[in-house]
Image (tube, rainbow, N blue to C red):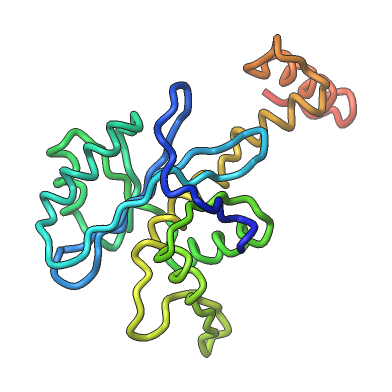
Length: 218
């Protein structure tokens, strides 16, 4: 995991031309912290880069926390944020007040952690030097239920709010199949920078598939 940490880098400033993604772990403000992580995909390295992490510890005003998060999201030109689907509708309405779209994540938290651990093992994530994030990731435990299904979560009495936000945005950035597919098309066909959108690469791949198998790709 240490190979995935950029030592001395605590936050990365927004850059022009970079598309950012964000994930929030909502909280009602009384017990758990509310956290936000923003990151982008480094296409040449095929790595999910974490750019910013925020944590608001209880007690706090959820509306004020969302307002502060929305301001940070705008600085990264992020008009939407994903979050836990089990948080209900209040984050959707709250973020909407500040012109940010809240999308409920399809994957449960445990699955996000499984994806994150796999990405860490393959060095596909570039983490910030954040002590709380690192300690929460290191404390995650894998458990096996009676039905044989594995799950990953924080230890009893522990917290994982920062790790959850980072896992959520990392999962979104490392599962960009469209970008991987385009890169595959370009490499497969030896395309050049003149075909940045992969149009010519796709045409060649389609024709190759038809000649090889008789299957027409539309």
